[in-house]
Length: 179
Image 1: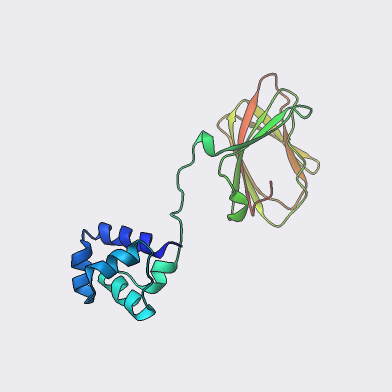
Image 2: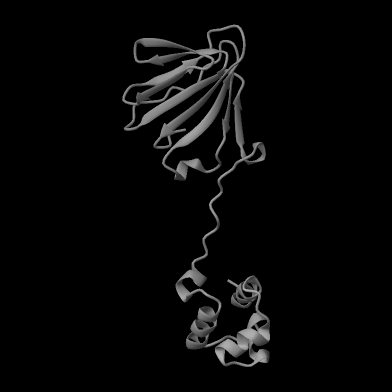
């Protein structure tokens, strides 16, 4: 971590000059300049004083948390295609396996099918965006058309297939992540 650079960013964010910050901390402008350029390092007590003058504390200053990404675009997606099975999977939220749920967009060509999902302790939700699919759960089949959804506990083997004559797409979400 570049302490000086981060201190300078905070100072500018607070609309303070080096001279104003130095005055608030009872330091010299030259010392603040050297700290911001990483030429010198402040003692912990001096750093605490500087941070307090900048409206933060040492804990928050060294907690380097990136802002949570909320919106994802097509450029963020990861795609996997299996031509033999007639399917394409788009992971619509990258690295979702670290989250509590994992959404994918699965596109099936006519005759295509998803992977078989073994039973697990969780739940699944799907929304048919285009076409129609058949949801297979153990020995039962459920037809889901465009605009319809499915939701179930994932305690049985399951998969979807496109038995129709045109491409189908399903937004499929599992919790915990399973894809």
